[in-house]
Image (cartoon, one colour):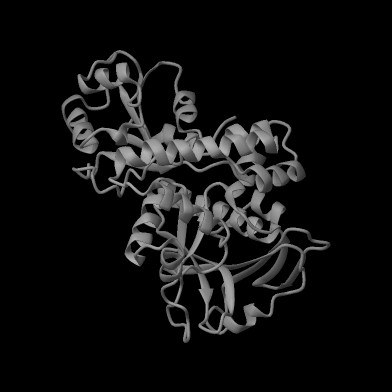
Length: 378
């Protein structure tokens, strides 16, 4: 199945080194190999390949060099910079990693001007509707809600298989990737943190409360959450407070890249599914089109909340509220309307009887249908 980043990467690959970051097993290697039928593939996790990488032993006559999991090499950015500066793009280079390749603090040189970074996400309804053969919206929606969007369990489609895959997937990340990148000894503590976060998707979190539950310091919890973000297990969104009186200003919300990880009701899973789709689309606009994007939520100190606030180039573009089955217009929108009078307001409903357009800026939509055609710039 083709991925939506492929076209853009092919336009850029002859100009710069292409870095592809994203969660482990989200399809980075498969995507890279799809881009050419003339490539050398080297994986830094493989002993033999690691030796070839360190000694720069590969076929310069091949069109493409794929360096998988290269972020695990010490000072990998400085190393790539040297290759680019001396050899150029002969062959073209794709480097992938399952930890944040743009922010990891051990990377050394910034490689400014020498690369384009792309973030690959798990599958979502928009990508599936465009590229999956025999796409069926209802089936795809239910599978994403149950087993998430990682390609292997999604295409298998069986809940039992997904449960086994989920456990081994997380074990590999925490007991291999984490240990190789961070000096963390309390793996059990991080596992317990993940269990707690799975039950709090869609709710604001308190570092102090989590620390109390885990019997650790709040700074430790905050550091662990940052590590889980860098490993693409979770992502964090913060409240948008500009010009809003009585807004909550610090406590974030946490979502999982794998919707199947959510331990809650169908409403929490749906909100996580929408969060993943919004996060993915905003990163695509950032990576492929150079837009400045961010995802937030609105919440007052009294607890009044809108699930998502989408910003493009620092301008609020849409407010999005997610409901499992309530297709009556949320009164919460009116509380924030004076701050966002001409901003699109969309209520997404999982189980909807009838879609509605209330006015120029307000509409109630089927969550599944809207996510197949998600457009955050319109």
